[in-house]
Amino acid sequence: TGVRAALVRAAPPCLRYLGSVYTRKMLAAAVVTAASPDHLVVLQHGLYGGASNLAVLRQCLVGIGGDNVLVHLASANEGMTRDGVAAGGRRLAAEIRSVAASAPSLESLSLVGNSLGGLYVRAAAAELYGGGQQELGLAPNTLVTTGCPHLGVRRYTYLPLPPALHSLGGLVAGRTASDLLLRRTDADPRRPLLVEMADPDSRYGVALRSFQRRRLYANLRGDFMVPFGTAAIETGGWAAGVGDGRLVARFAARRDVVFRDVEVCGGRADGIGVVCEQRQERAEEGAEGAEW
Image (cartoon, rainbow, N blue to C red):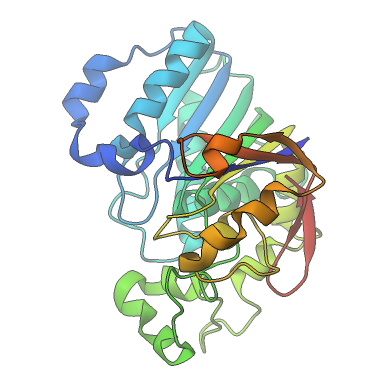
């Protein structure tokens, strides 16, 4: 099954701001690791982030899952988020294999990626499940992204960005910027990676469909880094994030909405404003993929 949830503000705030609040020492003291867990949940941070960014989310999941869940804060990409989505996905997959090997009681896997981390978990899933095989030995359970630029940022910066400036993206985020801007390079003239990831017949599509549940969360307004259109895989009418607020009412009136909170949609409260089910993923160039 697939679910899309739309938030009005960047929620939960801990996903973006806890890096400066929680130290590694505090984190180690605050979370108790399960002795014989059967479910592994891996949390992946975003661009220029660190494992501790998702510390509070880890605490919440441990509190819910108890001894049955092992919640792991991925660290393989710390300080290494500029060399592209594929490279980050390979590092994350290797880290997941290592964690799984250290806990033989594990039976299933869930992946959670925040911002760029959402693309990392999708790339890692392709490494682990893209061949239709479960070489990891763990059943794919749930894949979740929060504020993830699924469609890149070529059209989805907060303010419209002239195409002439796209070539400067490498100064900000290296090869990762080329991926997010859907740019081809002389070294790699194939179609952009994010377009490949949206192809249902690619190993990314195979891996995504292998998860029992797929959830994505997007902010309906006010997300400076990842506007709603790219995070929610929405194209028609959605573009620069500065205009997101004008489209909230239209999105909330969709026929596939199964939950709606008018207070949140109206900007009078924070939380989940809209939930849609069984939507088809569409890449910016029109490819269709797995349901969310």
